[in-house]
Image 1: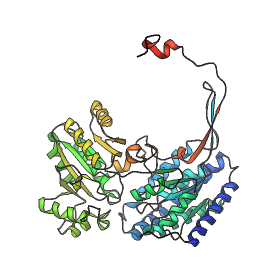
Image 2: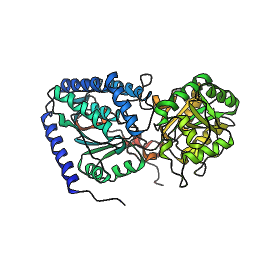
Image 3: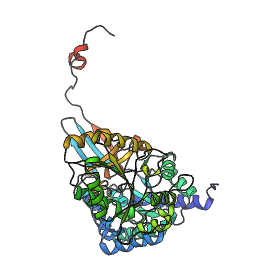
Image 4: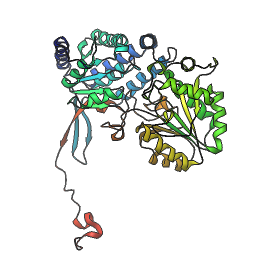
Length: 468
């Protein structure tokens, strides 16, 4: 049963908010060059290889989730966020349109409550911090209990960075003893919440009474047609699935492969390190991944393939990197068609491309609407048909999904650690949450020459006809 918030917790949050607002007041007159310099310093001090690897591995050790060797690969996201931030204005006049007589002026969003997921305690704070300092916001980070020490350590580095440059360190603060009541109160008192994490966290953010950017659940699904480069598709599927042991909601969960290349793709995945379960192993795997109530078991989330197999009760050769099951059924009763958050993927055989599109729709009816899809094809018409068909916010073409969705140096997606899933996913935005979401904008409108079309132009063939 949920407990009530204590007076001590209320006092702690209130004091943090007061310090945050005072810190914002101290930087309210900083110009663009000053905030850009702070953003660069944060990027370097948090994103240099030595610091990030140390804290990333600390996060895996503390939470027990993720790949200790591979987690450090997320460092590129800090570099990309800094790149995007530095290329945009965020102070004063940020856009002018003389033809329409419009000027846009950026202003801070305010004090942001940033809810940190257990899977990204080393990445989300500096990503949020770079965008926030660019807009002269303050941030109070609320960590997941299983990763609070890691979150606190990264925020400590961020505070030290500001302090050394003469900026108020209370621009960034971290809750030391997080609890659900305390986090709920924090969200209700801050100006904006960024909720990156599970469904209950996002729902709480939207129920806080304050604006919130949340993210929806994933169930990333790839379509592979007969025009695909099969070796590339298999390699990218392995890269995406293996990133931090599949902890991300963008990691390939389902591969829908057209019949013509199904066996070829299956063999290529095995060559990339995939292990194909037999019927008995698949049954054992299902019991290990989901409990009797149909909920994902925590001990199988974002751990190695060998660990999962051991929990399930079968042996897995040491050279196998991820686990595959062949799947026909789609629906709530077919658990492998839902999000897996692990190094397990389901393989579907489609009769043809139209059949693959049907399967995509059915899979997203199970879960993951609004999040992500991908395709390996060189047929532009099919790529667009897939994009028009799938109820998702982003589709990656011939790219490792979990490395590309949130921005990469090889596509034009805004860099972020938070992926909006639109109305499909119960979110307010379909976009990658980035710099523009961290600011208020004042529109200044000046008079322009009359821009009113004639009634004949507006009503077209219906002008002056009998009203229906």
